Amino acid sequence: MYTYKIEQAIRAAALLHGDHIRKGEIPLPYITHLVSVAMIVRDYTEDEDTIVAALLHDTIEDTDYAQEELVEDFGENVSKIVITLTEPKSDAAHKISWIDVKKIYAKQLRKGPEESVLIAAADKSHNFRSIVDEYFENHHAFMTEFGPHLDSRLEAYQAIANAINSRLKDGIVHEFNHTFEEYKKFIINVQKTYTKND
Image (cartoon, helix red, strand yellow):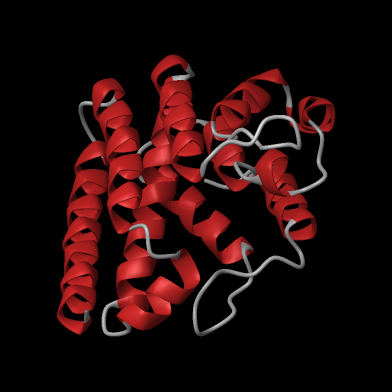
């Protein structure tokens, strides 16, 4: 599926995330993740706004792109989907821990549009798969990039997994659950590596 609106979303995502790169040994442009998420989403829906939102799901969170601009450029429906996928930010007055950020995100998924949950499942599936592929034999690099709090990481992602499974019953939820299981096995192996070294 290819439309003018999707083309505009690809261009916007490429420009807004132009200097962003993915974590890992090879510094891939961040747009590779966004296009991958959109392609996964496309396997499960033909809804144009959902595919557009998949391409733009990190714009409000990670760039200077304002919600008002998103509404003007791509419409209210895309904006609602993206806002549900936008994690809260800490400021000087209200510091939010990493795990609380993820738990708030999980609550947003429970209440937001189902299209957001579909994108979240695709997003996390791609992230889990990328991490396992990248760091399967290099646990030290994973700990360096993502930090040592492995139990908190599993707890946070379990909250997100519970939210996804509470909203989706078919299709992508099976792919998500499979990749999450692989990610959990990977984290357990990382823990074993560092337990042996203590």
